[in-house]
Length: 256
Image 1 (cartoon, rainbow, N blue to C red):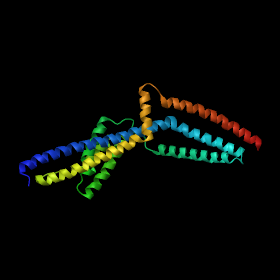
Image 2 (image 1 turned 60 degrees about the horizontal axis):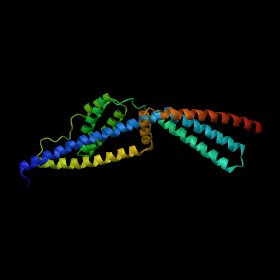
Image 3 (image 1 turned 120 degrees about the vertical axis):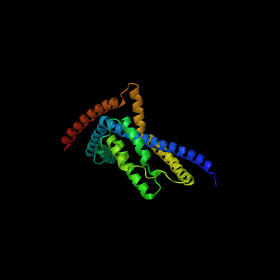
Image 4 (image 1 turned 180 degrees about the vertical axis):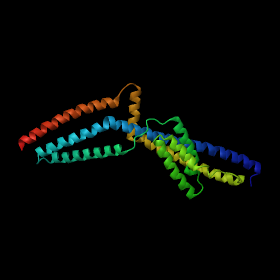
């Protein structure tokens, strides 16, 4: 058995590593939620600037394809293209509906809100639980914490911290050997969680919308306006397609 003084020294090392990992997990959790909020904010801006126009253009293109199919009922390729265009327009409308149904992302996440999130994450994280019941409670609380952060609601975060109360898993009044074992187990859990969050962040950053956001932000920092320029081109295309659709209707009416 390890002498008492060596146990205390080893315990101090383990608890220091545990504290460092807990801070790292909280920071990674914060980075993940901040990145998700940034993406949600950009997705809303993209939809308001460009997405609505793309939906309108898809609808016009579907109308033009339908006109071509009606004018050429024996043309199987035209019939196929009309159905495909209708499917694209329907999918665009459905995706637009999903975006519009999402809550408005906060304009900005304040430093105070980020600080409250870090405090909540360090206090409530499920990896600090030592029982299934406590893990479930912490998981539910962290879900509320994440939602509050995504809204930029600092008051809700502070309220959740108060509701959670003191950490029931805090180690007090236990012999050094037991504390060493408990700390070693937490370190293993925390290391695993760090890896999991890194993988989650990689998944977010590899997504097409994140890549687009990064490219747009970089262009805007150079003084360009890529979304505005794309919106202008789409408006021109929409105007042209509207004219074509109107002309097509006139031709079809004459043929009937």
